[in-house]
Length: 216
Image (cartoon, rainbow, N blue to C red; front, side, top):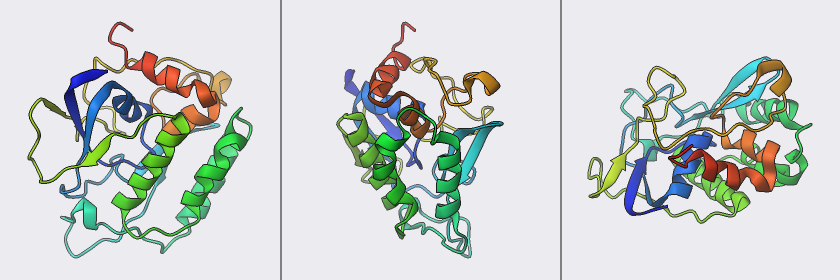
């Protein structure tokens, strides 16, 4: 762990493994709450593994008159049954995984109850993920936009579902683990933390540590 360094992240919906590895690696983690919402990012989507490859699960948001909506004020839309559809997709993808039944009772409520704000929803989900991984959630919200604390790595735009937009990260080298559709699709790295949890269970933390080791 980098005791004297910190990292600044955007909020994320059931974040990818790379995102969670930063909570393991850095002593201080800041989550941006004053930025404007950006489309097609992990802020309101996660990627899981389906029978035919990666599947994106997107949280619809309430669109205002302008696209410049602050992330802390961004509301979740319930015009569609996205929660029901998301859980059906997750169940279909992972019900045969080794640890689905072990974790489903903790995670299914996020696809049933109706939260108002995306940021609050993501923070609550992140806290649950940390509890399941048995790691301390040391993340705190920023106090002002672009007031990046000293010795802090700005990673707000570094993680992206679009590979061409993602930054190179020498401190993330994904360790392969067995996935449900491994034989059909091969190993798909850096999926949502849900994929790692359902497949590796208590072994997930060791995978995270190995994936964030510089020497790998």
